[in-house]
Length: 431
Image 1 (cartoon, helix red, strand yellow):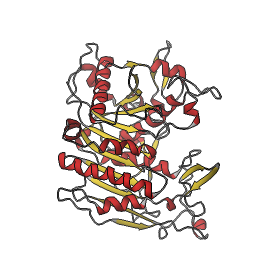
Image 2 (spheres, one colour):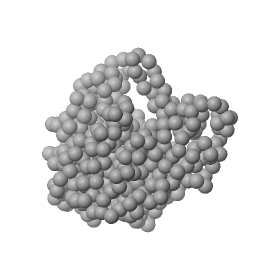
Image 3 (cartoon, one colour):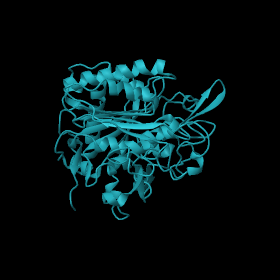
Image 4 (cartoon, one colour):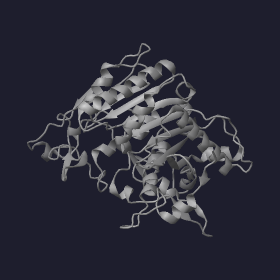
């Protein structure tokens, strides 16, 4: 199925944050939207750092370290597309391609089948999504905001800075893959993408549609796509659970899916709900690794129970977990020393470990580490999770309602990308 380019519709609905109008009124890319500012706050090769004053490696990295300057930002920022298909429960796709791949596809000179990184957003159950009708082209009458469009832009580049993470993941390299943010209504919740055939078919349609848009011949170079990296965040974790419950010898699992990333997935309101689902997901991953020797998986979580379950059930094939790095978050030197002196919940212990071959990783930053982890609404009451008195807080990170839960995606996406199979990247070409 060929998808259509709806970038003009998107800019008419939401004229900020992705596209802009050119001199003649045409729709063109806004490089400042894809690579906003001058730097990215992210984690290093490992998350925890016993030698750092605060115990972890979260730091500011200038775009210039990846060769980005005001003069070449437009080129390195790559290009975004918004595609729509006219059937299925998931119909809207925000896609980013690095400039190198845009040029190769335009000339019909891809070196290999196109790779993909797909991220699932949490379900859109909030009232402002339910009030935004028709699906994705509507606006909430109260404020005129097209929330589904804004959601796609948010996960592509604005709030979570996904494009910047891809550009900055490996210094001296650039992503050899398309980054895809599908946008789904709560009623469908990616139901047509959480089967192996559905995911493979969808990404094949995206590839063919991009080929048609970029190459005047309209002919796709390859009959199939390449490798797939799949990420879940927050309450979209159940999408990973459902997909990995279907592990089999189908080509999607044995030839295409190469990496799973779980960014603080939330599978329920208590361990009684969460752990059985997490166990299903992890067992699916373990079975998958027996079918695909290139498989990789990284779990980033605030739940000690998730970390312990994976730690106690190592990936097969003779792998083992290396000695974990544990950082007592009460022992580090904190910028907010005055808050540490106050009575309150202990900040807890952070832990990190990797499989002996480096293909699998676990990270736990406990909820007690954060001053503002998440805001929950329950029984008409607002509950703030986290250690409100003594938890970690970074003024540079404070983005309005930003919370520690979001840090797992905002700060760690480039960590997962940097640990990917090298085939997801290519050495940067000199100009």
